[in-house]
Length: 166
Image (cartoon, rainbow, N blue to C red; front, side, top):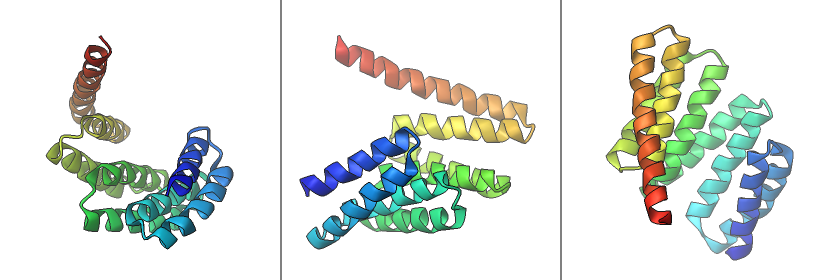
């Protein structure tokens, strides 16, 4: 399991530096190992990460299929942290396709889950995404409300980090 986790993490790092082709190679190697081990969480993460890589490559429909598959798997496992992240990616995909309504739905769902499970980083990220969406639609009041919430949660997370370091 350590090897497949390391490969998956390396794929994540490739995504962070915008190298989706290299990331996909890592995910193609980690996925089968997770399957052989029966490690469902690893399988779901690999599937979702492949979806993110496909999105970066402009393969939106394939990306949506993979990310939705991962979300469904995590829902069955009741693992909500990765779901909130993948929902934000889905929001980005729909926004890039010009479907602002679907983008809003995914972001609102991400925020609801993050709030329900107290995931402060994800609450902050979902609020920022909603702020951007409302700003793009010309709703300055809603945009400002979500942006203020983003700042509040971001600062809360940063303050916790600073206290822990002290």
